[in-house]
Image 1 (cartoon, rainbow over the protein chains, first blue to last red):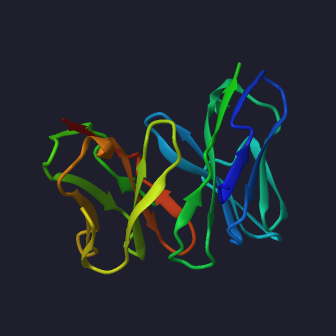
Image 2 (image 1 turned 180 degrees about the vertical axis):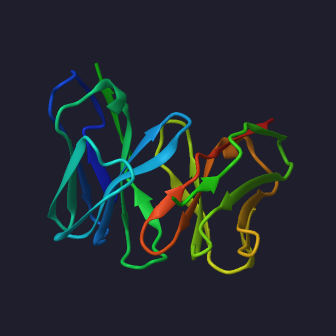
Length: 113
Length: 109
């Protein structure tokens, strides 16, 4: 089984809808991250969490919110989806170290119509 | 604003050649450096990490770091068509990674 899983893998939604992307990990890491990737723009950090009680905004948090339900679960919500949130979304985890390698989930491809 | 710059490519090399991928970064306080490989539509996977000035070798891959010049590179020896992917440079200060936009590598048979 994969160490970092994301659900759903693909999602089509309409403008204005609220949707949630979920991430689960079995690596036992405290640190979790949400990124979005657009063609030609690389990976952009949306939110990150260093433990269940710690949530931090990344560089592009507007229009998104997160919930850290447990050490192993970190969810990303789009409160009111808009077309320019169409992107590939990745969850990642890392060890509790400044030098910790990040391990990525398989990604969720989101299309907002 | 931390910046990580990479040539977007594509960098085209013939099979068996050495591919050289380059990355510069703006934050002098950066302490650790990573190269990730990403196939189209897939998630990034770690190839190399490097923390000290100099070279680090792992199989066909060599990472090179020069903190004075704020420069990190990845050399791929004996390039194979399966190496065709986008290579992402990532740099960290204390707690989060900043990614470059990636360089696309194409290895032709």
